[in-house]
Length: 224
Picture: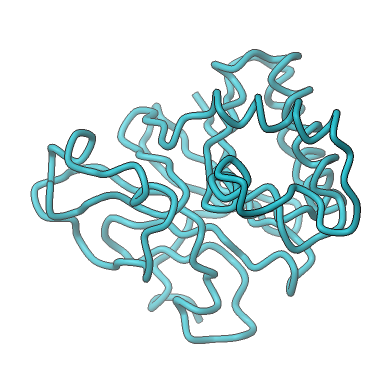
């Protein structure tokens, strides 16, 4: 099965639609899933529309095929600390989307991969699922790198921009540390696009979509 992941859309509807243009044909074929790793809101100008687009995808393909996870901005909305739209308020749309947010999980496991917004409690090792507090899944910062002790799984997360992790303001692709972590927040508000990660669960290999083709994701320190 092919499992696609994108994260940190931040109200950028055009970037979301561009990513979906490549992903949806796989969903139509059937043997594929899409995991959205949170932060659908805050920053761009189409927060309502981004959430509603995801909701429509779930209604069409099912929640088992389109998995939307909570990010820190969604939890802020649920706690009343942030509105979905900063420029205007639509009570009906706001209430409908907030009700949807309360149904979303904080992590998803597919094969050998843990998907979440920010990270897990790595000290818990193979007991990460029970050893990670809710806020860690959505708010963990800064990004951890290296092998997670006692855990033979990969973690796919957003939250921390890959340009920040790489210490390169021009880097907006997927950051793989060569061990346990794939970070996929490409800072869409700066780059204008969403990196797309694909996991082939049959081969346990990870790919990134670049310029119309899929490429193996190399560790950052091996990129030329």
